Image 1 (tube, rainbow, N blue to C red):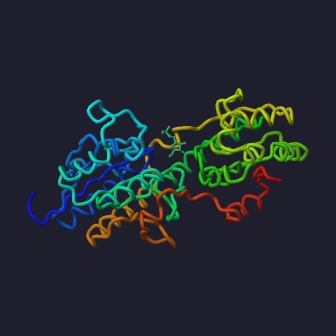
Image 2: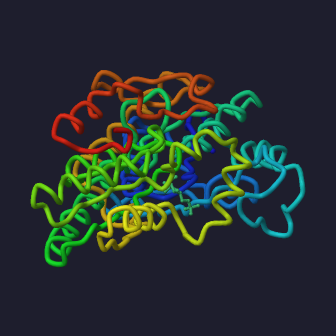
Image 3: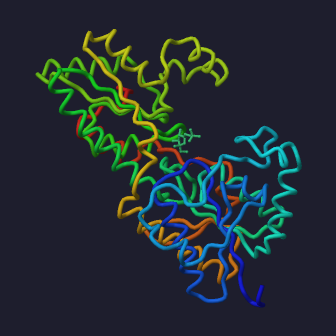
Length: 366
Ligand code: F6P
């Protein structure tokens, strides 16, 4: 490799989302624009580093990917520091010292640094690899928007758009059949996606993991609506929502209780509770992976490109061990060690919770 050329590895890890390719493009084009850079795409997240699967990304590979969903590099949920494999490794790598293989391949590929696009788990792994001597820059990616240290992650706004459109569509069928329509959205630990889309879509009830719900409160709200002549209701439920009774149990007990229930997911349980308490006919839509697919929204393309260019600036300044962040509406960065192991949940008293209540939305707690 010619002297002075910076060799930058890029990998995409965890759940995919719109904007990943825009971010890859942003980092790569900004770094190549500074001259003397080589971009090495690592395949399938950390698994690709374990297995040494990588390819140089030139202008041809970067052309036309701004608007493409998913990731041209592939992703995995590989967690190298965990003994159990999140994904199936090739036979060659299975059970070996995965962290040792990562360090060896980082050196063998001649990388000067590594840019990791991912959510909480990815950034936590990145912080530990930084401690192992790799030079890393993180970019916050997830439709859940639950990464500590940044106001926004890319992928979130695209998912809000998909979920809001789905809620809009449910209004017409709900009113045609005088039904309660329950829509279950992604978001295991934090309810940002359900809160944003629920308000934007005019949800009558929004249930998020941060506010354990009382079935009686939901039923009372739906009965009140019916008494006011509203023959239908829209209930937006985050997949990680839980009842107040469950919130009082420990995780193990909660899991045992759930596994004994005849519901594939929380949305079905909430619909059943509503039907039993109010007699209103209820139907369930689990939006699932539609929230992660497709073309990035214009804002996500912008945010991902901004994050990518900011990462290239940090690399030029040799600022490693940090994650790019949006703070106060501007590009910033935070130490990976501060992000690691944390989740950004909807805080009590958040202004959007006040907004939802102000327009008469039931949040399951009153
Ligand atoms: O991490 C984002 C996310 O989409 C979560 O909201 C969802 O619960 C999870 O990924 C699904 O994970 P997987 O793609 O491994 O099924």
